[in-house]
Image 1: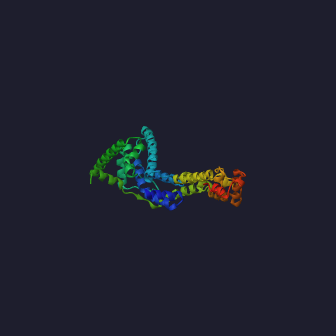
Image 2 (image 1 turned 30 degrees about the vertical axis):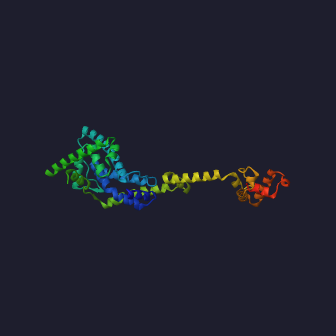
Image 3 (image 1 turned 60 degrees about the vertical axis):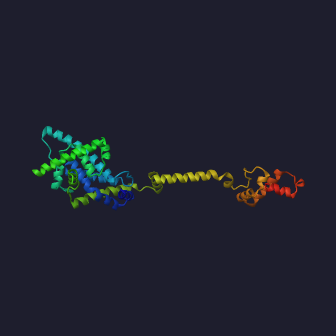
Amino acid sequence: MLDDKLLVWKLNRGKINALSRIYEKYRDDLLRLAAALLNDIGDAEDIVQDVFIGFAQSAGQFQLTGSLKGYLATCVANRARNRNIAAHRRRADRWNGNGPVTPNFETPDQWLMDGEELRQLSNAMTQLPYEQREAITLHLYGGMKFREIGVLQKVSIKTTQSRYRCGLDRLRSILKSEVQK
Amino acid sequence: MRPTEDIEKRIKNVYIVIDSESNKRVFSNILQAFQKSKAKESTPTGLNIHRIILKSPISKLAAAVIIVAISFFVIHQGPDEQAGTTTVSKATKSPVEMMTALSLERAFRRGGIKAVENQCEQALKLLGSRIASLSYKELLSEFNGS
């Protein structure tokens, strides 16, 4: 936490190496978070890039009140939720016409390379309700406490914890059944 | 390991590979945005100081303490010391008080020897022309406040 405060302090004073350090430190977890929430590598990349660009643009005025990782993860989760809502609407329109849309794992100039493990996890995550997916990814990739996730999801801590536990149990059984296949 | 910990570890450590060329491109976009915001941030020094004071709680507290200290100093300095006049201090009431060593010292600090002379004159005026009826001993004992 102190390390992040120092990095933000340096960033606000225009130090490029502070920005680079923050980017390298949190890029991977934010990409995992976005990929798990969206099941679309291209969208996940766009969102993480947008979040870092927005963060870079706020340098000079940024005030860190909590965890930097939690802040960035929240930004990713909010954008992912909006993207998902928009995607659902598009899918609903397409269901009326042309059938289901398959998840997009192959895009040119890919930043995040598709791997078997990532694809397996993303596919398993899509079988969970979105709130459970969000609780799991924000806790594990965003390092956020259940209380903070509850505030974001506008539910109580107990509900968040329940979503997390149920989501993990379901994921375990999905991934186990994938292995058995 | 408990099943929960096992699945948590598996999710947390899911292996990802970053394409280095794309990574450089993404970071350069981020850096561009950062440098643009830095260019917008360069405001005149006066405004920057103002923003620095208002942003940091410690700076706000320090600025408030300084303002209070200056106000206290200005209010409690008193008009006599400020003006550097040689008027007799209004706190002294009687000729005896005016002629004590402390009072004379204060008068000297205010306006030098001239202020001391004025204070002595004032004190004597208040005493009135009693020189003929007072002995030196009586005069001195009165001056010394005994």
